[in-house]
Length: 408
Image 1: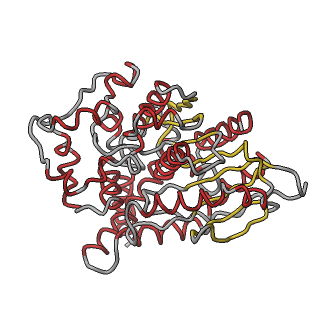
Image 2: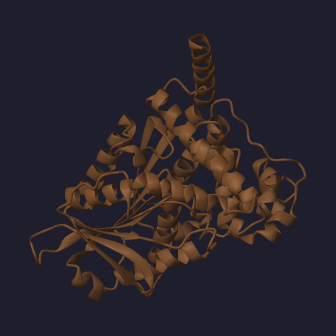
């Protein structure tokens, strides 16, 4: 009996080890810890897909329920920060106030959370800790936008919620209510939140009816385009957790309300094939062979089929909409955007989105700081807090808040 039990235990251990282990780059931060995190996330995604295929619930709802459950375990930090849940022009927001010094004008940060426009719990766990830390370390008012998410809504609703809430906050009378210095306001976001933050910064920059402008934008591993799923970083990191190339494509299709069956076509860039010459202007804005440094291009080559599927762009026109893909914005729009801090990770499929955007902003005359982490992976900033801390996440949070402190 004991031998049988030992045999089953050994077999179970082998199966678990086989499931958890994946080959990872040598330079990635804390690989074994990342493997365990990834195995857990893959299991949640699998449960979501099974639930979806059985018609029980949309996969995003299942995944989000698991994320919310995990985030609820993260203890509240910086408890001295006062919190107010309210509405800004009908959009749910949370406002973080540092205590004391009543009447003193403070800096402010509008924060937009990530999660593929479909996931995330902005009022719980890591995002709550992050906003509290920004409010405490910067002695700033922080507003986090709790925008509506897929699958309940699709583009442009998420974008419009963020613009709507931001415009309300930037009204002089509202800023006065929160004792905010109108000259010292930043917008910040991570991943899909970085996408929304960049799009909001562009809109506020060019909006002649908005008298108060952002001084800074902070984009943390932002996703900025869906025309090329074969950039050098997509090719290099397509199987690196926690954001796999296929998962990013799924998020895009869900965000844009597109047919999920298009995933194979867009992964091989059928929507931007060489026979679609009318796309040349848009594709030049994300020509990574000229916008990336050679050390990041390495041996990778562009992937554009000779003939493709032009019907995709007709079916999903938002693929060419700069509100959804800020990297496609015109140079004159970029020129009006605020000074930027862009955080990128070497082991992230979205690395090149951020670096290309940094270069395009520079070419448009905007000052940019690109903080690149050779051991960074997608989502690392969310793992700077107990119970799942990564050293690269702790460093990234510390450094971007320090940059804000120096420049805001």
